[in-house]
Image (cartoon, rainbow, N blue to C red; front, side, top):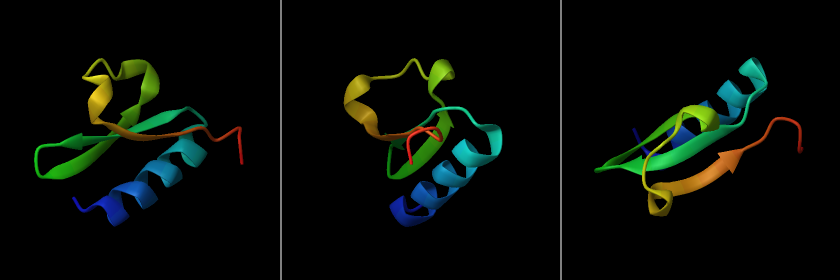
Length: 54
């Protein structure tokens, strides 16, 4: 998915689940998942969304 769409989905996911979400680059696209579950390369992280810091 594109960066723009991934950012919107990541923020929405963080606010819905009320957990920190990591947005990361995956090949040609981007992905989002709960930060507690992300065990990939730290250099791939684009941004972390924390629903408690807005």
